[in-house]
Length: 74
Image (tube, rainbow, N blue to C red; front, side):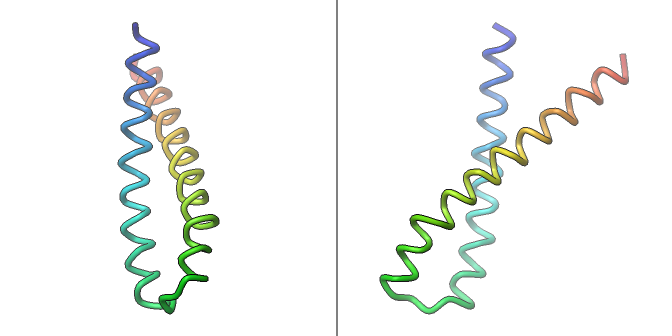
């Protein structure tokens, strides 16, 4: 049961981080990238998977740091 809770919390971290990265990327994308179908395809097939990978990596690191800080306190 504890492992299921940890996976759920990890997934929530991933979603939150992905949303933050998505909003930051969207603001930069709108400011600097011209809008056409080629840039939309680049965003769809390159940028979104990179954002998802970055969200999983960052969430994993955050989760390990939180777990290790709890072990140090005990």
